[in-house]
Every structure is written in structure tokens, then in C-alpha cells.
Amino acid sequence: MLELTAADCALILLFDDRTRDLLRVGAADGSVGELLSAEEVGAFAPLVEAVLAAEEPRQVEDLSAELSCGALGPAVVAPLRTAGGVLLAAKEKGGRSFPAGTVPMLASFAGQAAVALELAEKQRSQRLLAVLADRDRIAQDMHDHVIQRLYATGMGLQGTLRRIDDPEARRRVHQAVEHLDRTVREIRTSIFDLQAAEDSGSLRRRMLDAIAEIGGDTARTPAVTMSGAIDTLVPDHLGEHALAVLREALSNAVRHARATDITVTVAASDRLSVEVRDNGVGVGEPAHRSGLDNMARRAEQGHGRCEVDSAPGMGTTVRWSVPLG
Image 1 (cartoon, one colour):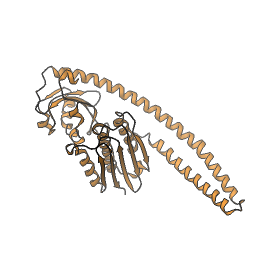
Image 2: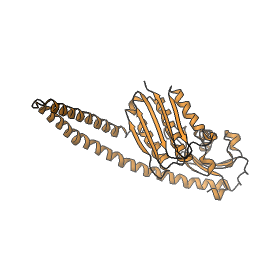
Image 3: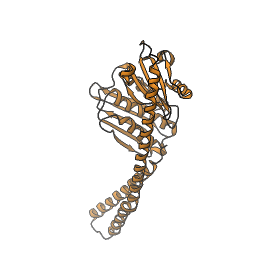
Image 4: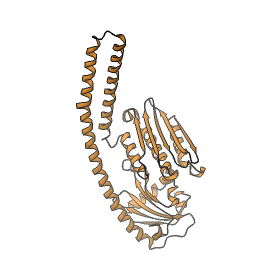
């Protein structure tokens, strides 16, 4: 599409299905579009709303003047009628305006993209149903078989304690019973997590969806570790901050740092912690650090902190945490 329209970048901008007012980049092509920060993407919201309301493509002479987006100039925006977003083609600031024939061409592209997105969403829903059914089966098997056997083994060991005269042997058996009890508690927590993950509105589920969505552009799926009662301990306003930070950190790792190995760790106890570690090229120039500043502001609003360790060629680690309760 870039070649046919002579554009410098092409973006698919989508509304968040839950909030309906948070834009995200569904796809991007062209170096200019890939350098847009989350705040710059959010600036497109009024334009996207106007195009979706009119249900007609629109030509914009200068995005930098209309939306305060300094990197982009002339643009054409076409609605994705069934996908809740728009297809945008733009040139760098100061570029020549698009010819009149570009508008119907982009509208045709938008229609094809909307169909593709709709089919992809249906496939995702089918895969999700299969995953949820498998989780139900795993949770049921763990409860009916694994926990019952461990519980029976622990009861049997406790019954033999009074028959053991050797103090060291008694200590070891007692320790084994405690380990079994701890294992049963951990398995029950895992069962709860499997069942809670079916709620698409839960913070844990939304974080996993964000990781799958953004991390899907990498050669290797990000490694994810989540611990603690994330869905019960974290209040809604902190959950929104954490989700935005996770999206920004992952986007930086995938789009800017070009990382091939990403590790995500989320934990909830007395603090909510989000850590994203990658092996990319580093943060880069200060001009592209607005997303990092945004994460720092979100930490301050939650009375927490945000730390970024980065060096050229050595990867980046983002550590973000806020106190709970």
C-alpha cells in the first residue's frame, strides 16, 4: 500500500473494545509510523471518532497542525466499518498532498482490511473457546485427582508419625507433610487462576491478551510469569496504569528495540510489580523517550516508582511498581 499511495507510513488504528476511547496500533508499516509513541497515537482519537461517525474517508492536509503530531503531514483516513477503527496513510511533515484518486483507493483497502480483521477476530474467538474448555478440563483433573492423592498421602504420613521413635525421622516426615500441604495450596491457587482467566474483563486476562497481541510480532513468544492474586488485590485505577505500562514497555521492546527475547514478570503482594526485560538495542535517542516518561508519571500517580536499565546493544529492563492497599 505504501508504494501505491506514495505514503511514508500506514497505520491501522483501533479503539479498545472495553473502554472505547483508548486507541491502539493494530498494524504499522513505514519507519515514521513505527516511531510514534503511545501519547502520539492517542492524539488521533478525535480524528478517528469524526471519521467513524461520518462513515466516510477523509483527507487531511496537515496532521501536525490538526493533531499536534510533529512527525506527520498530509494524510488520508478511511473507516474500518466493522472493526471499530481506521486505516490511515500519511506522509512526513512538509510532504506533498495526496492526489484525489488516493481517497477511493484507500477506502477500498479499508474494506478489505475490515473483512480480514473480522475473520481474524472470529478465529481468535474459536481458539479462545478451545483454550477455555481445555482449562476447565485441567482444573477439574487437578482437583479430582492430584489434590485428592496428595491429601491422602499427607494423611497417611501423619498417621505414621506416632509410630516413629527416631526424632530425626519424625522431623523429616513432618517436614514432608508440610511440603505436601504447601503444594496443595499452590495447586488450588493455580486452579483458581485457571478459572478466573475465563473472565475476559479480569486484569490478568487483559494483560495476557496484551502480551499475546503485541508479542505476536516477535520471532519468539514472550516468556510470562504472573504471581499473586492480581485480580483481587489490585484496584481498578492501578490496574489501568499497570496495563498501560505493560503495553508501552512491550511496544518499546518490539517496535523500537527490535528485541527477539522478551521476559514479562507481574506480581501482586504488598506491591504490584511489572517488569519487562528484553535483549534489544536499547532505549535509543531521547526524542523517542516520551513513552518512558509516561510510565514514570503513572508510577508517580500511584505513589510508586519506575526504573529503566538500558545500554546500547545490552537490552533494556523496565521495572515499574506501586504499593497496594
